[in-house]
Length: 506
Image (cartoon, rainbow, N blue to C red; front, side):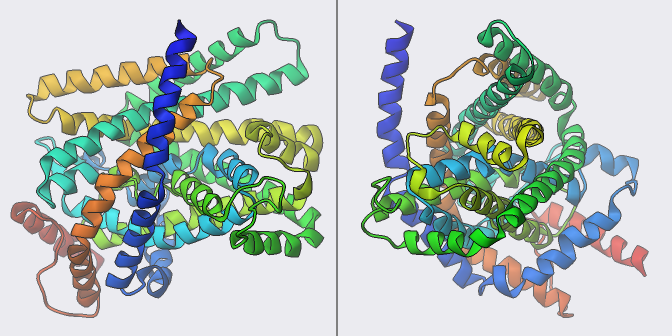
């Protein structure tokens, strides 16, 4: 009976997934990115240097500096907000997702990941700008924002905001299931290689319970604890992966030109994406690359903006520039390194769509580094997956808060607590699921999240351009009223905060 239910769910999801990730949505993603790029005058290019100078560079210098106790209770630092957001985007999709895209869509899928990321940089920027502009503050001073806030309050479509929030809740649960499933599978397989373990199902369940317990200890501490953990883990896991992948690529340095040739030639191969091996059409190459690109960097989903909205910064554009760097780092650095490592290590003529993506990802490390590579992969992948789990728990929490905003504070807290309990329990349960159904379902809800968000970004693209001009004009010395919040009282409060900040710097 259980198998027939799963089979029925799978069939329904296949239909929905085909619609959600069909050509209309792919065109919507590209079209939104193109429109925002034009309206912001190619901000991801013209202000890329600003995104580095005003984000990651000063943030790294500020690591370790203490904030005022009152501020720590209400918000997180820009770097902690970024780390939480990047921990939600940098996950198994950056390794296994990229390998899966190449296996099923051919090397040309990598090119379309880059295309989605180029436009995704300004899409993510716009999400952050609107997220901070329309965020709300509760009576305790905590800041909350996200796509559902600017859809409801900016576009004035509350019903669509509720839809986005509901999709976010299900996407969060699905995302945690995907990540936990990969953690339990990777760790149990690694343990099986070094010791004799009895029942594989039991081992996976124990691993899932361990992940659930650790997650509970972190997520129950709120965004402050999530931000602190993410700001410690993200730099470590990213640096470890970058060093290992660069080493592997250098070991096969002679294959780099061929790898790039495959990416560009197969991107426009109308006959077959895999050189006649995989048999996928040109359309499939684009869809696989775009879908995996969005799954990886999340630009257009309206998810990472939830973390950015909790930032202490008062300037929407300043935090928006983090979104530019976030997508650049996620796709152009991490995903590109995965692609080159994979394409320089293996002969593409021997690849097939039937190969298992997780096994091939681990083989990519073991082929280059032997047992040490397997051990490193067994550390990197769970870290990537775990940071995604804790970030999406916060996204789901904020979506639940929005959905039950009409309740009193005590009832809202009860609803959020209920979500956290369900989220943590399902982490343990999903560890034992072997079916790819959980990944496919999450893919569908990611797509469903994107649709209302992209529609709103198009509708509010003029406002994004106006806020952007306002910020850069003020930086040039223009004496104009800053656009910091959509709400007059918060705009005045943030304006005073900026004046105080400027006086302290003088």
